[in-house]
Length: 365
Image (cartoon, rainbow, N blue to C red; front, side, top):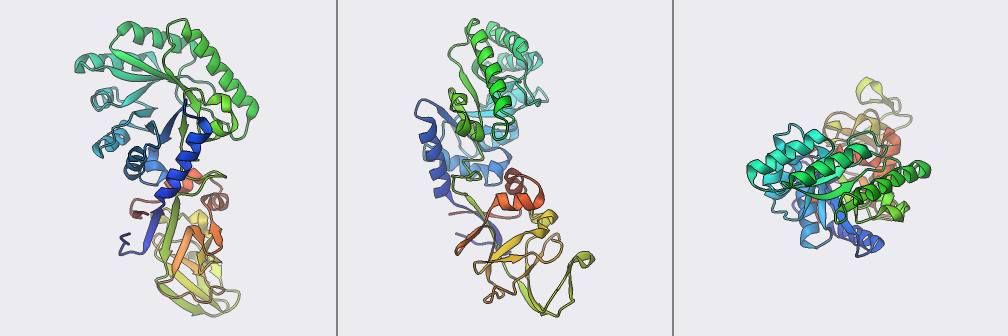
């Protein structure tokens, strides 16, 4: 472990990542492929390191990314497993880069299908395509009649390989009725496409919540992100966020702390300053949160600033300059989770970890 000069870092526990991916493999069984979703720099965990580790340990069939650039970054890091670009490609010239680097592409329209075929002809190399069906997410994808036209045109053109058909479940963690309707429409489309020869393609719909809550959604492949990173109950958190106290002082009752006098000491207090702030992704909305110092939950004192945060460490008796502070993770018998921070900020755990800035080094343990 190489610690940074500025003592704020994120620890990525690779053994926890392995444990989570193996647990997912056991849940879905050997007949179902596992796509490990590493978009947005692996949800802030570091895509190159996470994907490289998963590939070396044979923990996933392939990887899901949001853009061609993310896919190219993995390829430049020597990842050779299948990579699917889950986003809609534009400008269409990006099909050339994707195909040339062996990235599978999402096709959501006839225009995209034609552009993929044209790029394939120019390169003399088949585009690997997954057609996206819109079932209720309202983001990207085509409805069933358009999907059939897309499939037929790609099949007729013969310059593209149709490897998959997929959809995205919008509410698998909250709305069983709507999810059932989405899966029903997905199955109807699969059945109709079978009449056009779409029998040996990978069908996939399930995200983490889907694969856990709806076994029928697993089909040929699942796309796991949240569970893989331990951001769901029953899985081990992979990321811990830590810093150290760089300044400490005792203040009198009535002393103001931070911008706009946002905190006022209600008694004599010991206030610690941490070298972390919203410039690191520890956003101002976390100002009502706590940090762990010596295994004690200590409240944030006042508004979080760009590069520094003040904490009331009065009850953490051994707190001193250099003491380790945990923002996310476990210390002693206490723990602060990304989910807890998400509640404080009125958001979701995904956002908490993806907001951790690139200036916070990731240390892999």
